[in-house]
Image 1: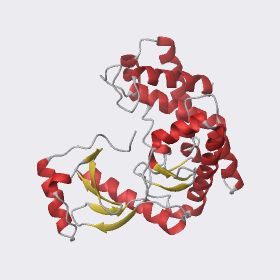
Image 2: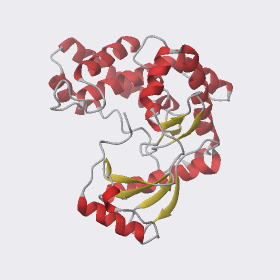
Image 3: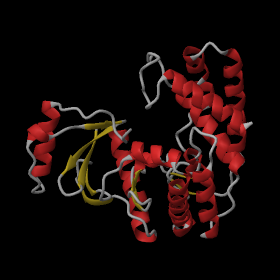
Image 4: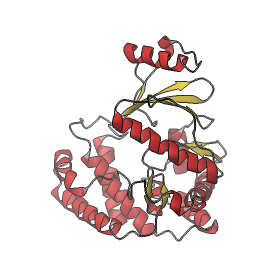
Length: 308
């Protein structure tokens, strides 16, 4: 469970990466270059907590530029650490300083599931970080260039065929489509917006063993959207809600606006439905988004029930 697909080594791209980095006096052996693939971009990790990002098309260049602007605002206004862009090439690639430390989302997830005390510590730190992100950046810095809603979940109309391909449970499909319609009606009424990470979870945080949070990364899907989008993945696939409860309490204590847990549940369920629908032709035991078909179905059913 990482923010990247499996690393790949591709000789022509590795040579081009090495040549580009050499132009700014960064030497790297092509044999050691692994491409970390993302939509419209790829990254190469470098020694010294550095990472180079390369666009593969014009959209990738736009995404990198937009994320760099978001990261600059976080550095300017917030107290937590985020990646810092240290070089932007005319060709569109970038060199960034990463958040120091080693993300370990799987271990953190299992500890939070097993230890309510640890979950409460992590939740409080998450709530404090989110209050900093949502409250510290002036609204006028965000309202004319960021998307007004996250890219996930996609429009309901684009998910119907995928749901039918993933499951033959028509009752589940009907419930899922009804929930997506409710989600879209609710999103259309949003008026209060903040900078949202929109995919906020253990996979894009550096969390120390004692539950302290060093920083956050991967703001590619940042949006000027409803604050609840940053709470939706704090609802884990379990009945215990210690994590999100502690996060909400800390968030509101730090000055954040009240969080409607029902709305967070709605967003969580809409995302679960979208992941199920996006499996495409993946076999039941394949994990296109980190879960098997059985796991996607279990999350979707739990989330739909929880959302009401």
